Length: 298
Image (cartoon, rainbow, N blue to C red; front, side):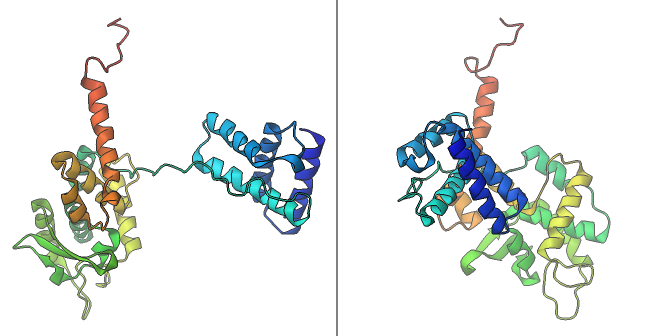
């Protein structure tokens, strides 16, 4: 590394140490600044301009660094030059106004249809296992959020009509169908429900009070392990799986939007990406002009 960059990075590190920044943070800053020094080794730090920073980012992008990493590195570089501006070592920050490439939206993780069946078909004999099965069946059947499930009261369920009334985000109410497997699971749970005085919650803890979100998430994690699932299953995965499986079967994005209670169709469209991935895998595996030839076929 050129001496002019080394001295600057050392001085900035001393400033971070005086500001009581952790050793972990200081090491991370030093790594990012060392990479900048490598990219701009032929330029004195005070002479760096915006286009050079842009080209440095472009080089890192060609090295296939993630958008999240690029954003972190640009933030580090900006901090260095902010510090230099405050000391009148440079007139302006060359990183000002620059943005790292935006990170793509992470696709939600879902269970396969077979994985969902394996999870939900796990046997339940003990009282609270029967309760858990009713919870998970209902969440998958109707695409409920964790908070919506925990907030359900006994009066919100109509098993005769197979409907559940849900209070969603923004206090938007929706009426959702309940699948027959979820109805059967709820019919097993309700006679075992033993509420504390005045408790209206549909799903109860061992003390007879409303089950908490944390309890529910922990029970699902344990249930998934017992069922032999190879995935880390969390409550929202049941909702994601509901949406993905509904879209795969029906192709009706608007209907899925209504069932999920999304105010904006764009929020629901994330599941079309999942559906496309599924279709792409089927295509790659089945189409004779898409398949890679095996050694035996060549």
